[in-house]
Length: 331
Ligand code: TYM
Image 1 (cartoon, rainbow, N blue to C red):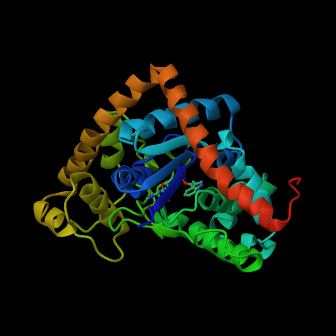
Image 2 (tube, rainbow, N blue to C red):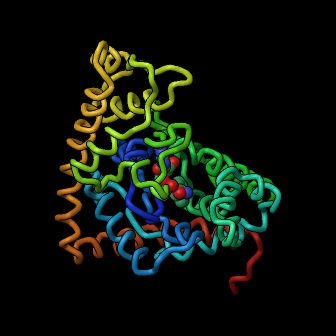
């Protein structure tokens, strides 16, 4: 049977949150033993909003260390930095010619970010989904493990692939998003109708994977809930439902089990339990990331090797694409 291919990435635009962890990275770790996996650090996507160059460099290295600390194993997956593989930008250019301005203008994240960064609605921001399609399609990806917020981007990658295949003959495999059942959309602790995001202005809205124990406990204590006092997940009770989802994801239990555990208990006690459960999972990840960051040579070696493997795989698809569109390559 043909080996299935997995591709995913995260942006080094800040410290990852527990949303990124449960919605994406934790699942990558599970998938790496079963499939051929490529996991990137999407620094080219990150610069579509303003980044401080020194910070971007630091976040990139920290994210590489965090990937490893979360359990990604370089002997089982290809781990690399997107900008070190020029084929991403090259394929993006070709895919731009089979993508319509109108469909990019309609993308939810573009509309959202245009509102939030009204002074910087640059072409890169609009082209973001096409670059993401290039990421995915370069590796002939079958599955893209992402959180719910990225499903629209995976669907457009599929549309672009299909359109290219129809115009130039079969070239790309059609990718499919892989969404986890529990935790695919962790919400903000302050505005639980909104997704938890690492770029939120209010640091109390998210829990970073690098927050220390006291900070984690404090953020959960301050999480917005309601005036009801039953700890059950229900329509219209976004705050408590989100805390339960986080608890289940970190305690590895079902909703029914969690609701039973906290039956008759108060919000204060519940919030402390959620905080402690999360902090206990984060502690060893943080210690391992710190250890890895002290060994810069090792990290650089992993990334160099990953980029080399990725370039080789990506070039196979890119050469095919260049041939199909009619780029002259000599006799
Ligand atoms: P990014 O960096 O915003 O997020 C990385 C991953 O985390 C998921 N995620 C969440 N899951 C659950 N709850 C949340 N609150 C939450 N917030 C984020 C995201 O869905 C994502 O899976 N465009 C991508 C990066 C990217 C990419 C790709 C992904 C670039 N190229 C190719 C897949 C394939 C992004 O900004 O992710």
